[in-house]
Amino acid sequence: MRLLLLSNAKTEGMAYLEYAIPHFQSFFAGKIERALFIPFANAAGDYLGFEAKAAVALAQAGIKLESITRFADPVQAVREAQAVIVGGGSTWKLLRDVRALGLLDAIRERVADGMPYAGWSAGANLACPTIMTTNDMPICDPKGFDALDFIPFQINPHYLHGNPPGFKGETREERIGEFGKLNPDTWVAGIREGTGFVIEDGAIRMVGELDCRVFKAGTEPCEVPARGDFSFLMSSQRPCA
Amino acid sequence: MRLLLLSNAKTEGMAYLEYAIPHFQSFFAGKIERALFIPFANAAGDYLGFEAKAAVALAQAGIKLESITRFADPVQAVREAQAVIVGGGSTWKLLRDVRALGLLDAIRERVADGMPYAGWSAGANLACPTIMTTNDMPICDPKGFDALDFIPFQINPHYLHGNPPGFKGETREERIGEFGKLNPDTWVAGIREGTGFVIEDGAIRMVGELDCRVFKAGTEPCEVPARGDFSFLMSSQRPCA
Image 1 (cartoon, rainbow over the protein chains, first blue to last red):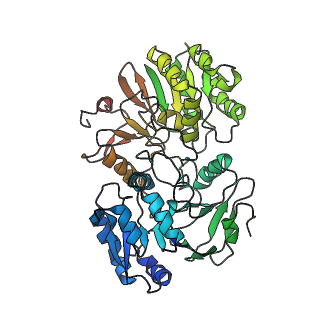
Image 2: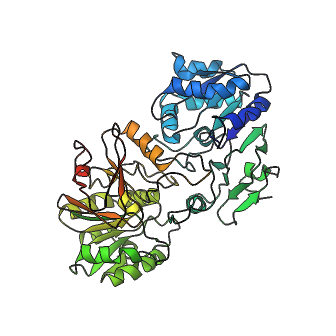
């Protein structure tokens, strides 16, 4: 299994996905020419516009993106893809549409066979056991919270510590703590913007420069440096390194 | 129908619910001595601790709070309540538990008969047609997004305009805009902290001092002053005043 799971696409002062170009280059390593793009997180349904926006950065990494909406048979398109790239936006709409089109099992089968999977934000949420650690507003019912289940832990993308001044709503840490109350056996990795995970054949490492904050019920949240050991996330039984 | 739907409980420099005491006093107007407290938004399940925390402010408004978890038959407790007060926390756990206990219909029947309903944050989300405009992390599956449906519009509590500096995730306005793409006929009212709505026999007014930002697909978001006319929210067919 080969996964590249990124926190975000937009970065202050950079073009869309620009920060991620070296990560795509390294992950695909010149072996992939075209990738099937899953654009359903776009709530407005502007799939070809989304394809065009993402294609700029992927082209600089040597990858031609093709939206799955260009194919008459989306399941067949997954079966024939060299790689799948899942764009961010609404995790809810993404999961709803991917489920409705029968793509969950199709993607699982190919990824189990070694097809590379890359995603950012909602596309990283989709790789988790469930979408329960999304930040997104639940704008539609995905008919079940279960997702691709490629990894045994949950990702919280766009992780932000604390609240802006004067705002007294729950912090991200409080929300993830609530998740832990009901899901005490699951690690949650809060990945800050500009970071992500590469997971290859059971080995996990972070890309980007910022620390990752990890959470599990019954343990104090802790910061793991970007070049630290994240292997504990791959087993719910192991403590934070 | 009599509703008091507040954005939040915590305010900088004030005790829990302290800002809301005059709103409770005015809403209950000395006619209610005890209220049934629905504490299921507390993800930790510390229902009596939550009751104790909320009871302080309610006592100052002349109301004795009693958690529904003190009663052997929760549906019967709703049938016999003078008022229902629904605390904030996780909208997802609240809806899951209220649905599982058969309380949705019980509360609807009593509120239709004139029993006052008050809630903050998750308790305000619960009064809407669905919980699709909650800010909360989906920590459990509520088995359907439909809620009490007391009002024809959606509330987004803790409304915050824009993003903190450097944060490039979706803004609240962008998230509500995504809701509008899939739910184009529904008004969304972003209520800022310290504000809320009183709805009595079809008439709606805001309490608190901050403007309310309202959203609907196909119209520009606009700010309605706290003392402005919110009657358009009560009909999906009417434009913003």
